[in-house]
Amino acid sequence: MADRFLPGDRIEYIGRAVFDGIIDTGEVGWVIRVEAGWVFASWPRSGVHSVPVRSARLLAPEVTRDVDEAPNALLWPVLGEKLPALESGRPCDPYMNQGCHPDIVARVWDELGAELPRDCRALAKGRPVLAHPATDRIIAAARGTAYALWLTPEDFADAREGGAKTVMAWSDVPETDLAKIAGAGWIWGSWYAHEPAWLRRAYAASGSDQRTW
Image (cartoon, rainbow, N blue to C red):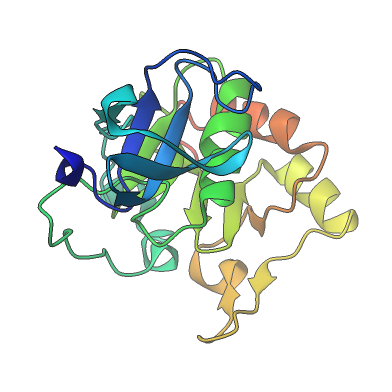
């Protein structure tokens, strides 16, 4: 029974709330390891703690919607190579298994995505993105330890004036210049206060196939 959970699996705690409030019933975490009937998992609210295996439930990936290259041809190379399937045969969890830091995925999907009129969470080459549900145009994308945002011309100008960058330097690969690769409107996000408002306007502008900027 203990071997049903594997590192990286997404689980829900289904036992009673832990007495000291560390883990509440219904919280979701990611498996680190399993030992002697206990599953050690990383819980976003409280860090790494163990719970009995019988008190955890395996969850499928939360988002399974995929978007294609056609409406996002310029951005496609920025996403990197699609990662191979897990040897375990389990579905890849986007927070843990798609080459993006879980904090970045949480920023794109859970924080910025929550600010949009409709659920825009999707996958592109396995990477977590926000894409307009009608046109599949991507307006935010996770990439390793960073995330990129597409902005309207006015917001792009304001963001650049406020210090937003289009070039990201990495420690192990060549830098990524969004302006050269993905075209106009793309910046690297940095938890700027205006990002939710920027993306709401980007969402509105991306609802038509006629988006030219």
